[in-house]
Amino acid sequence: MIEKKSGNKIKKIMISGGGSSSNEICQITADIFNLPVFRVQTYETSALGASLVGYVANGTYSNFDEATKAMVHEGDVFTPDSKNQVIYDALYHKVYKKLYKKMKPFYKEIGEII
Image (cartoon, rainbow, N blue to C red; front, side, top):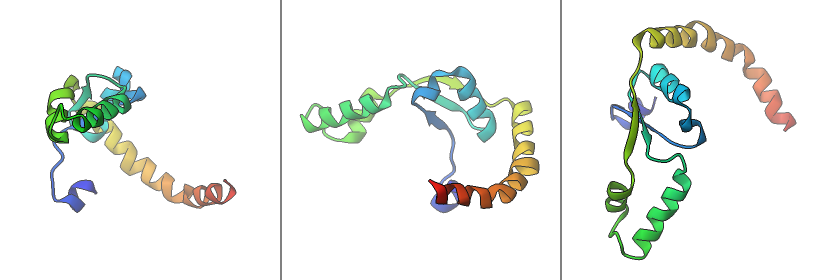
């Protein structure tokens, strides 16, 4: 959907945050999306983002692109496993899409309760 709306082909996924510390989660993400997943050098990307803002604000870097190029680095790479991708694709199309349609009214009720 993102590709269709933006008109841009997604070539890779950058992953960060607590879940990115799990090699298994990174691999599953690569398999599901059938794209290489790059883990940035730290999962503490909120702090990294705050540092970017600070360094741009104090003039160390003239803009966010410059700061990002200097401070954000690709770490480990997870390449999709085609066998797993076929399984995830089948689960999505044959199970999840049908399940979601049936569960949608319950999701709405949950939203009304909370």
